[in-house]
Length: 345
Image 1: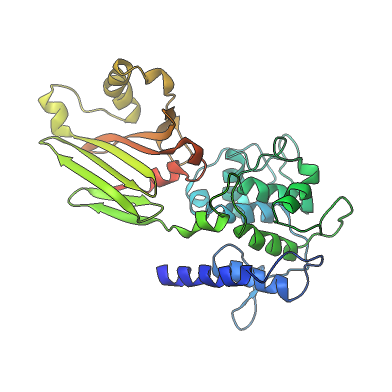
Image 2: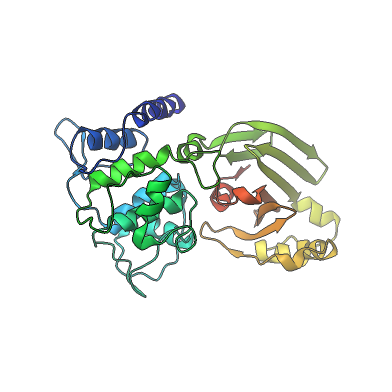
């Protein structure tokens, strides 16, 4: 699987040098872009040919639901989207698109066309899709660009080259494929990393002996430490600039202390952890609640480091996870999703 995905990215890199969005989405360029994205798991067909190959339907206008799905895949967020339980106000989103629209809406990447309408079946315009992709690259509409003229910034950064504008009336799935493919080679806002770079790291498992598994976005683990005590343990590791701190307490830990084992995560935090955080002067910064993945979590930024903190209680083990990253990289990882993938045994 890893080799197959690596080869797909190599193929994509080679094609990227040859492809750029054209005035018309029809033709070989759109087909090749769609095929490359398909191999990378970022684009899907609308049906299947008799020989099993996908039908991309590149001359058809894409819907807003399809466009947002493409956006989520470009961000590498499909796994998180499918794993989450999303709260959104829209009543016109088909079941297949709910995870993608919910994920994008929760992260401020897409808005509705009305109070309760997303406009899922409406055709997406060039400016709307360019807005989605620019947001995927880290740009903010209303600050870095105006969504009604998103092509101005997309031309400036090399995502497009003047083929879209106020007079554009036709926008197809072929255009979506070409723009999405070109986006992979564009640098994220701030430079130093392309959108494709953010997708290249796979989630890999890192196992502590007799302890558990962390799933992280890269296997470049620079250091780690696990300390066992009689009734509790501490763990730390760093992978791809993402530090992970965890503290685990057994049922025996509470028994030795003459305390009742907490019934749930909220009780554990309020009755045991909060006092220590108050003494450290940081409890006021926490606002715990259940996230879309079912984690009882809070977010905190201290000294330039962003932390995603989760409290959990199992039958015989409870504890706290702290996933973190540099503040400027806070949007790079979905830390709630990574936390939901932690396995303990």
